[in-house]
Image 1: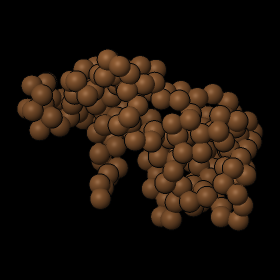
Image 2 (image 1 turned 90 degrees about the horizontal axis):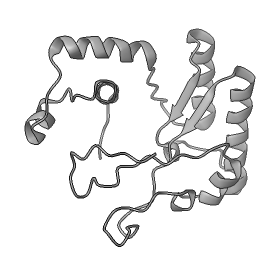
Image 3 (image 1 turned 180 degrees about the vertical axis):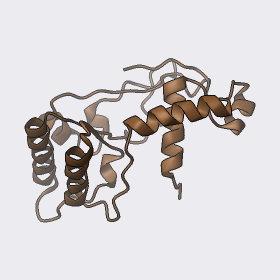
Length: 177
């Protein structure tokens, strides 16, 4: 089991914000620059001001939405990200496609009422057989997701973000959006 803490999430946001790793073992392994203590502190202050990390105790969708409503009302948070979406526990009284549709409708209604944005992160199924002839990974689409057709019907937009050459060189910075 992989456990990720809020500190890990914040450090990864610091890394994304600065482009420099805060991790000594990563810097040494890949011969990269590591953030100094003062750079890390300054970047962490920026990240902590702009990001709230919420770990709901039971991962029920209704409780997650209650947390989001609280953060919107108390702190004015205007963008919400659920990662990974499949970790949510959805209501269990209907077929999967109907249940997913209700969840997406509730998110959309809340977003429209509050002028906020919802981003559901759905990680692709195993990519072992999803490669092009040159060995690079295929662009992920909604049908490579569990319940892909429901995502396709209900989403306002879908984006794929991936690193096409990570299997050849873990340091390759190319990202496709």
